[in-house]
Image: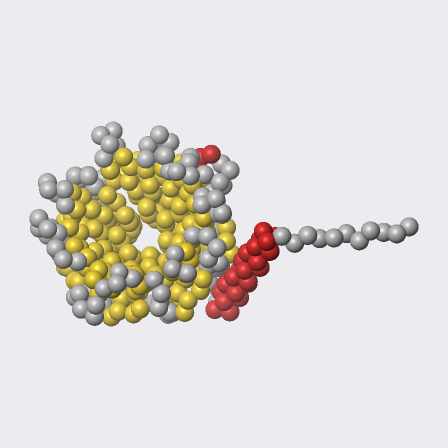
Length: 361
């Protein structure tokens, strides 16, 4: 009996899918090999998001480069999700972010994942986002923002799931830090003219960091406390440009002066190791191209030669870790890690992906 030979038809779509799978495998192998070669004793945790082919945002954790999905696009409650902040305590991994019941973000709800298990922090009918998480002893602190009954943004703190409002005029909370039972939160509030004022709350007592004029505003994005020193970073609009700014114990220092063709600068994250202060963010040049930037003790270090943004920094021993994203092919965001200035792509560039926060243990 003659056996007919089975013929395989290779379509353009089949080739596309195979090429995508191959690229993904190569990226994963390279990332894992780099992490393994760099250190066998440290675990690097990075969170952010990655889109699927239907442009649905998936909250994502990269553990030593291995991708773990925190949200499920088939779950109606988390059809669209972002991870904004991570903290690791012992063997427990805490991630704060947001999720929504629709790809079109009809309702976004603040969300906490502990070891991958999801907890909704707010009423599912309220628009809310969790921006930062910190764990002290057995207490889990999360800050974020939600629309209140008056339809305006209001900053909130959840301690072990119990919500407390943060005082101020339209306050906005971006970052939290705990030291010696003291709770530090930074963000902004509005003055009578509706201008944002960079603000620090210590145990609920607020301090204005910026002196806002009728043509200026300021926002605080990150806080770090070392001993008795409180470091806050953000940016201030001085009437002409955004200027990346450090406030140490309330004393303001500008990280840029508008020279070298730089139009705007933003500081997104701060970390202190010994006497060294590390700040990351980005710069806009005259052509409005963004460049991921690290400032070490005020000295500027450019991390990328393409459009890019740095979102978070962590220092472990002598290693400096920075995460963010680069724009590849002029449009696609690629989640990126820079370790001691060396770039590692976390995603393959086939869909949008960004890294928002890092923790090394």
